Image (cartoon, rainbow, N blue to C red; front, side, top):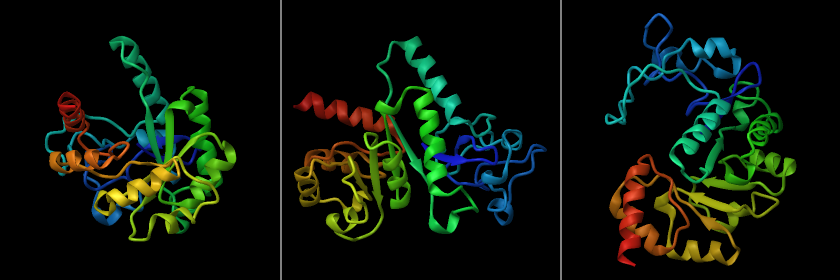
Length: 244
């Protein structure tokens, strides 16, 4: 899940820090235009403002199998509460969470607060709902991970990577060793996984959406997978376990 901060300092979930032209509509039903999307910044909006946008009825063009429904972007707290209730109803084990801080130096004060405030707002919700021990905070921005580490050195942190630099060069961007290294799956190799494991770092690549690649990466020894299709991932892992 991707966390964003609004004008009231509350933590909402949104892939972009604005209202996407792909999926969102104004309260009066008008589709958000590409030309205006980035001006509809969640960071400048109140809770009420955000509730006025419907980001579900149109569905998502990249995921045609997704069920369309009228829905606004939710608070992280609402999602944590819904998951807790659903887990209790179904008798499921407690769910693990992976939440991204989507900060950039250019976005400071424009699309999000300074990273210390960003990380503290997210941490506060996680602590309030008692899920810190079941949550990993990930980011492409080393500043955000440093901020989270300073708040709580024990929380699981994930370095997201989208470059061709070596494992060690990317790790050198941090003052500490992250729990998880999360590169683009195309950059993963057996050697990278082995080198990370030597330092007790788990490797969880993104974003793996096809069955063949899932099988290959699991065989290589990855510690998890980020995917847009968790139903496929669950099925693939079940098949692998049956074959073992």
